Image (cartoon, rainbow over all chains, first blue to last red; front, side, top):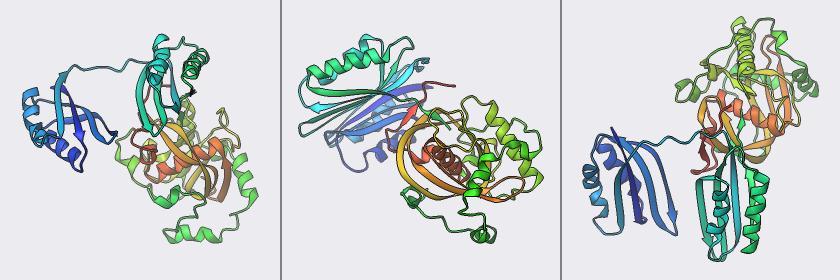
Length: 172
Length: 216
């Protein structure tokens, strides 16, 4: 059994997911993790599937999706990855303010400096308002208050605001 | 999940059977003493030793079916109540447990949030049978985890003001609990279990479910 990473990008219309997953099911492939969203109106889907079909067989099965030239499909075999076990803490970073170049790169570089790992990230632009929301895992030895100070300083230089708040779940 | 249960100020749901309907005439309802009765209740009243049971995990079918209404006065119910409390006590961080979570498809749960930092009002340890939400308002979103869904957490909106009614195990007397904050969240999470709902059924959106990074 092998894993394949598949991306489908392009012009949005109803039925893309139904067709894509139908074709994968026809090959006997199991969808493992997948995510899909619209980026500036463009359809964008990424998924990992598991099964016995080869990369070539999957690409051939999905080729009709590209027939009208509005969608691009990629298929690539990938190794098994195990999520690094944490022992650290989880945080949600929110940044918003007036749009200008470099907001994402300067803020997330502060996270990278301390070994923080971004596990989920969304950015959106609406008119002049730029918004970034990220899920971050911090190693146990990171001083979160210091990191928040560093992020706020980076954000302030760009004239935007940033907050870092804990994302710990309550056990019920 | 029904839409109206998510709204603020929802009313009591329609009784399903004559036994449930009869509670409408029960003098204990809407009585503040019924609430303090819950606060003073402890599992010692059950008079039996609780046994620790195995906790089942999704996708077990029993988690996704509404439990049967239960006779709170039978020896089996009293033992189950004691077992739920005993199992909650030995589970790290656990503040509530429903009967479906130990594989028994009846509407019963226990709660004890007395040691949790987010608690405001609390009623110590209590077990309720056939519990229903009477009033719920002031929704807030927070991230929840569940012993029966160990690999995910999710953002869920819950009422922070809550009134519920249910029966105490053993005596079967009807009581009401009025609470807020974290106890309100825990009680709603457990009543959802008795209705066959997991927090997964209530997540705030497609990107509101997260792989768990910290295990207790």
